[in-house]
Image 1 (cartoon, rainbow, N blue to C red):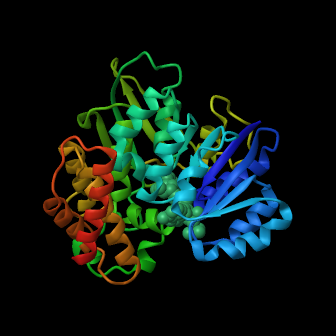
Image 2: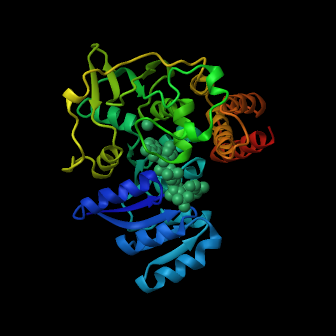
Amino acid sequence: MKKIAILGSTGSIGTQALDVVQSNPDHFSVEVLTAHSNADLLIEQAKKFKPNAVVIGDESKYQIVKDALWIDDIKVYAGQEALEQIVESTEIELVLTALVGAAGLKPTVNAIQAGKTIALANKETLVVAGDLVTALAKSKAVNIYPVDSEHSAIFQCLAGEWHNPIEKIILTASGGPFRGKTKEFLSTVTKAQALKHPNWTMGAKITIDSASLMNKGLEVIEAKWLFNLKPSQIEVIVHPQSIIHSIVQFQDGSMKAQMGLPDMKLPIQYAMGYPNRLPSDFPRFDFTKYPQLTFEQPDTSTFRCLSLAFEAMERGGNMPCIMNAANEIAVAKFLNDEIGFLEIPDMIEKAMNTIDYVATPTLDDYIATDFAARECAVAL
Ligand code: NDP
Ligand code: MG
C-alpha cells in the first residue's frame, strides 16, 4: 500500500489520479490532497478518499473547508507555505505533482529534500530549475518518475536499457488544434478555438500551450533533465493521431517506441505503481481502427514558441525560467481576452531579451528571475 500526496487533486491530472486510486484500493491510499481555490471539489474528494490532511491554497476558503471536514477528522491547512510544508509529512511515500505552473517548484524541492519519491506531472518545475532539481534528487537518492505521456513513453522504452547510451529521443506532438494553419489564420483565433484540443482533455493552461506548441517546447526541456540529454539529442515530430507517445533511438540505430490510445490514466498509473504494471480496464488500441499513423515536421516559423524553447534550452542558465514565467503570464492574458494568440511568442521573446541572464542560478536566483519575468510580461 503506497501512501500518496496529490498536489493539485482538483485538476485534470489530479482527478484522473484519484480515479486510479479508486480502481486500485489495495495499492494506494491518499494521505494528502491539495487545491488552489476549488473548495467544493476538494471537500468532496476529501470526504470520499479520507486523507489525513488537505491544503487549500486560497486562504479565504479555509473556513469553508475546515467547517466541512471537521466532522471527518481531516486536518485542514491553507496558503502557499502550508502547501510547501505538507509534502514533508512522514507518512507520505510518493508525491504526485499535478499542480500547474512554476508554483510547483518549491513543494517539489521540499518533497525531494524530505526523501519522497516524485511522480512528476508539473513539467514547469524542471523547465524552471531542472539542474537544481535533478542534482538534488540525485544527492538524496530520490527517484522522479515522469507522468507526462511522452516522458513516460521514453521511460518505458528505457526499461532494461539503463546501461545503454541513448543516441537520441524523438518526442511526438499532436500538432494541436491549429496544425497546418498559417500565421494569418492564427492572428484571429479565439480562446474557444484554442481550447479545443483534438486528442486530449486537459487543464486550460496546458491546452493553450499545446495549441501554441509551447507545451512541446516545455517537454523538450523536461526531457533534457529527466534523461540527462544534450539539446542535440532531442527531436520533435508531429504525429496527429497521438498513438505513438515517443521514441528512443539507441547507438545501434534501433528505435523503441511506446504506443496506446491517448489516455493520461495510463502514464499516471505507471508512475504511481512503478516498477509494477497494474492491471487496468482502460480502452485498448485496435490497429484496424487506425489504418494510418502519420508523421510530419513541426512548423516552427508559424509556431514560434517551439523554437523559442529550443533557444532557451541552448542558452541555459535562467533563460528557460524567464521563458516559462513569461509564457504563464501570456497564456493567462490570452485566456482573459487581453492579447491575441500570436502575441504569446512576442511577449516571451521580449522577456527573454529583457531580463538579466544568469549562467548558474541558485534557487533564490530562479525565484527572483521568475518574479522579474512575470513583472516584465505583465507590463508588456
Ligand atoms: P489543471 O489546471 O486542470 O489543474 C491544476 C491543479 O493545480 C488544480 O488542482 C488547481 O487547483 C491547482 N493549482 C492551480 N494553480 C495553483 C497554484 N498557484 N498553487 C497551487 N495549486 C494550484 O491542470 P492539469 O491537471 O491539466 O495540469 C497539471 C500539470 O500537469 C501541469 O504542469 C501540466 O503541464 C501537466 N500535465 C498535464 C497533462 C494533462 O493531461 N492535463 C498532461 C501532461 C502534463 P484549483 O482546481 O483549485 O484551481
Ligand atoms: Mg505531454
